[in-house]
Length: 251
Image 1 (cartoon, one colour):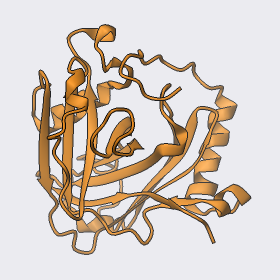
Image 2 (spheres, one colour; image 1 turned 45 degrees about the horizontal axis):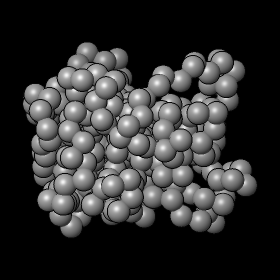
Image 3 (cartoon, helix red, strand yellow; image 1 turned 45 degrees about the vertical axis):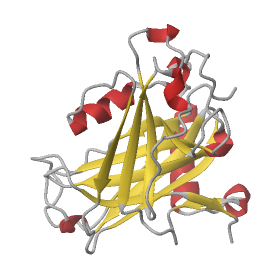
């Protein structure tokens, strides 16, 4: 089942613990160090990809069906990355875009200190020079309704605490598909590693943070169009480094 403005997003049943453990292992083996024949056939990571320097976030209320297909939808600049967030609307499940609306969109709006839009709103953030900071994201194959994803930051000593890390599972929808005039990177799931919290027990000079985990694939998302996007914000909320995965034949 693919994204459709008329469908209502349904919660998936919990996967057995054994499946989650297997997926967690898959995330470590396939995402961090591909070794299976499937991983060899397709490698999906930010390796050899130019890091985006501008983040364009497009927020659309689930109540506003026309907002999805507007011809004047903002485009990202060169070296920029666009993310699309569908925000739960006042009509609940009856909203025309409720099928792909997520509470994660509200989490992001809260972080930006922005109210939920009545229609749509765009927000552009220029990343600061990353310096020595390097961010890597990667993903494994879809399995049992989940996809293994990983995010790695080094050197962690290059950013002042508390810092905030975001890892988004996005569905890349080409322009002209599903009624959109532009390419969309629709946020389907979100994970925030608790790396940079104030008072955390990690050593102050820790050189590397890495985490791999399974992320749920919501009903309606096309697994073939999924990838991951990550970014890290410093103590002032400034984006310091971004990364996005791209799939290509493995070696």
